[in-house]
Length: 395
Image 1 (tube, one colour):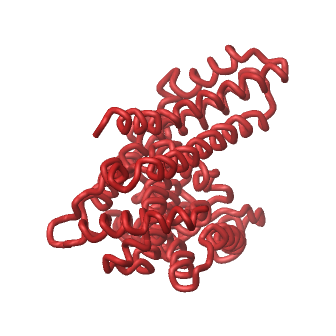
Image 2 (spheres, rainbow, N blue to C red; image 1 turned 45 degrees about the vertical axis):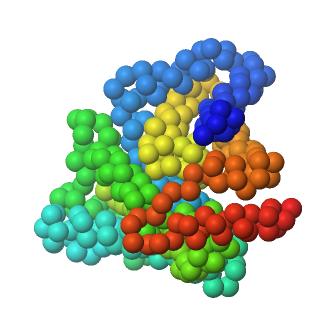
């Protein structure tokens, strides 16, 4: 790899960090306009997220669902599809986990816990697989379908929490608070630090990050998902069934988001509540982009955005700024990070156009698939052959 390619890749890696710094600088301007002290505000943000054990554990607790959603987004984006339905998939995963755990509460915890997690994963897989199937078979835009599935999931939650899943104790008391009965204590995820919300779901999330890395870079399925994401035309030329892997990408993404919902229920709330998703479905997208759509990169990125969520709340209380400012600050980070990712993609396309196929192959890092697939040369050669057509389509 020559120096020019190395420097270009280094810039691409550092751009999300620069984007976050620019967002924080814009936040300083907003604080000044409101008459607040930016130094005091950002000091409160850092202190709230990392200043003591309570802040650190809250940060890691917030990072856990962000990481699970981010892993799902990594799979979807690597497969060339965009999953905006994380919110709905979190909700249906949490609903499925709650319904299963409450219905089979007499089962031993060692049996009930894995089955509850599996039910949430299955619900998320189906909820993500529906847009995937519509995209693969009918060409329906997955952004529209996943957004609409979010709304369906929210309406389903509202119906169930005011009907079949409503806590019987609240019904008897006549309060009708929209929440489910408490889950059996035997399946609550253990707390890793006493008297905090930090639970063992964080360990599960990290293990799943390693599993997703292995899936995407060490298995035939993962190789085909990435090949379809890089160039579906070349993948089809190489004999890869593109519709199958488009559907699979969104289904696996939904499965991980569904697990995020189950982990929130089992580890934090211990019952299904309205507003449980907490915006994780959207924040997880940014965490994945910040981690360069790599499962291992999503781990520190999720911790960073978890700190931002916790610290922004502390900042709001410390300097008495409107809650809208904390939301605006998070929105600025989202805006600049996503914009930096789009800029990187355009730079890459422009670089390929200027360098030509030979250097494009050198910088693209085509990897050999796992032994026995025989697809590497086909996909690489077809990718170069169709690069010109791909650029014309982009135009």
